[in-house]
Length: 439
Image 1 (spheres, rainbow, N blue to C red):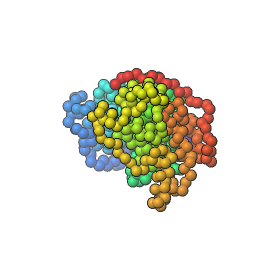
Image 2: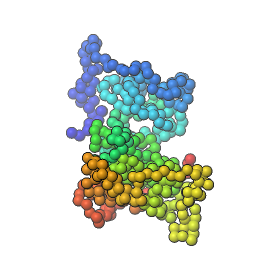
Image 3: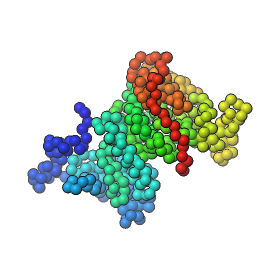
Image 4: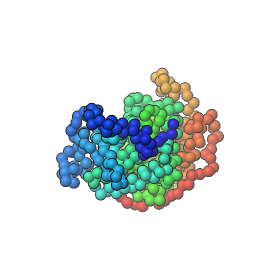
């Protein structure tokens, strides 16, 4: 059955009667006894909880002070329409942006996630940008089938931007953790990655760069393998690339690491890193610093292209010119980097990481065989998966698969392995914009 929006359901008589069933019963009889029990009513969820700003509504960090049982009320979108009221039931997450609350909408008695942005100028400006992106994604995904979180409504409450989205399940990192970081089967990985790629296709079509794809930002939609991509708080448009410090380090693309021009292809690098992690249970490139991250990528995939490195604003942080060698540059030695940064700590070594993608995947599969792992990964044909990783984890973004190309790879389509597979010739538009240096 196709997804129907909250607004569509409310426009039908049967929908209005069943969606607001409790309200309907109360209209019929004011004595209707149903009342939801609230556990820990009055418990403060926000830390610190002292109200020192915004007439006492906000703490020193600009967060709205929230308690279980509080009611967050929307402003009426049109005259004559009732305000929606959201009853706070708990905290889903906190971050530099603000808080995400689990709330109950009191007319429909449906649960939602409500993201409450900090009441600070920088976060308010970014929230306006996030709002524009969420509205655009909703407009181009009316049936809610493209594996991106759906915005239900947005409003301002006590000077805080609030985004109401569908309530989803746990994130993939938490799911990996619950499985003791042993990873998933290749069949499950193929299904999950296909859905992430579908979300990337939609974003790329609209010129949106997510900028923070990682397991924590991919949530289960009811049950695996259904997932959705969340958190557009760091997203930008290709035509307006404002930031240099983006992407979580383990999933940060080579072009961002060196400070070179970037586009939607940085999300495809993150997809490759996520796919490998879903198999291994641990990050493929667990760098302790940007320099360590570059070293790990170089060791496994080879040197960065000279044109990319030399166009990067971070050149002197990690490289040195050497005109007498082929590329015209080399990576700083560990001693040189330590002297430059006063950080002489040696990088951590991880037994599961080999010298190449093939060696890492096959080595972990051999380990699973020894341990009699029941997922079948030790016996399954890993060639399509390894080939897919090679195509997605290209250091040069111009050689990296686009989302549409990746959707046609045998690992995703589950067609027989083709050792001579090459990407389809029809390329998705790749517009490289030079980075505006706004730190």
